[in-house]
Length: 150
Image 1 (cartoon, helix red, strand yellow):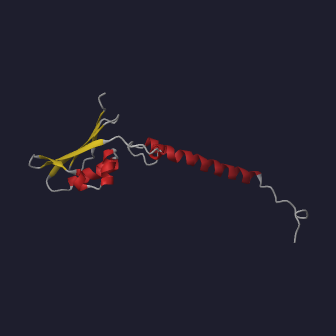
Image 2 (spheres, rainbow, N blue to C red; image 1 turned 90 degrees about the vertical axis):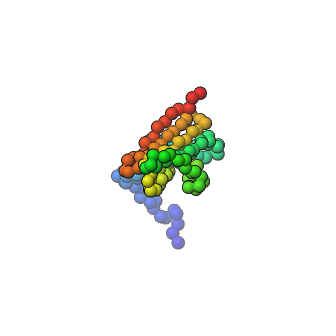
Image 3 (tube, rainbow, N blue to C red; image 1 turned 180 degrees about the horizontal axis):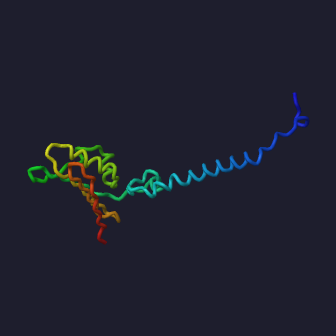
């Protein structure tokens, strides 16, 4: 059995190996900062899944959501959103999650004889009133924002 006293110490890594290792560690740490920061520049500001605010446990301000659709005959009718989508998805719509709102509008446009779908969120905070509308037939959904009057 070899003794610590008789074995030579391990060789030191070369300068080139140290630089590569340092560069790899530096790039890895930089990515750990940049990836979460990329969520701040997203188009969907209502998506707070990856922010520290999602861990605070505070209740989100309530929003009252309503939807209407316009039929080919020119009549407008209210949509009972609670009967059409799951409660979790209704919460996402109330938080103005664009991907969920757009999917809801697209789903309503697939019905027979629908010309336009509108969804309105009346929130009791600084988000104010957000109106989303989609003219059925291939256009992108349109969003209108009005801040709350204080």
